[in-house]
Image (tube, rainbow, N blue to C red):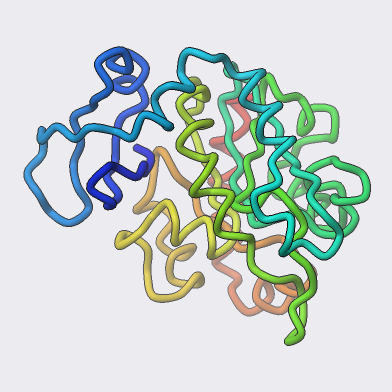
Length: 244
């Protein structure tokens, strides 16, 4: 299930199959996060439905040409995304760092090296869009946070593009939510008060989601402090291997 904004300005959860097969009618049955009855029908905003007929390639081109938040990006826009409809694993992270911005290659940095180690996959596999889709919460480098690290992902990206893109990824069987921003957006009230507790209860979100901390060097101390994370990695590798 993935969130999409309706013309009632609230978020609902909908099934990709329903959207793919009902888009001509412009509706889907959904279970609301606010507890309304299952099976209620909501009309989805046309901007989310009309793109279904346009194809994935034009949509990816539109994402890569996006300039919605250009005025807020210190290095300018360079959206980074990787996707094909056959991908069975989806990685939703935070936003590119400077190295990724410079190269245009997602996770092309030390954090990516650690993530690939967690997954036990090589670069060739990782960068094969037919197997792995990479859709960050923010597609562009957001700049430096004066308090340290990078700024949060720009909120415009997920709001504008995720609900348009994810219906094309109907083959995805497992989505990795890497970092707190992705977890809050996709787990909503199902998430715990802290990232640590959300990751500790990773089994609660199976089989569709698996929450992970960000693999940044800044989280090295967190990994050492939480030895149970080895169990998460073992489950991660067991689930990812058969998908690739």
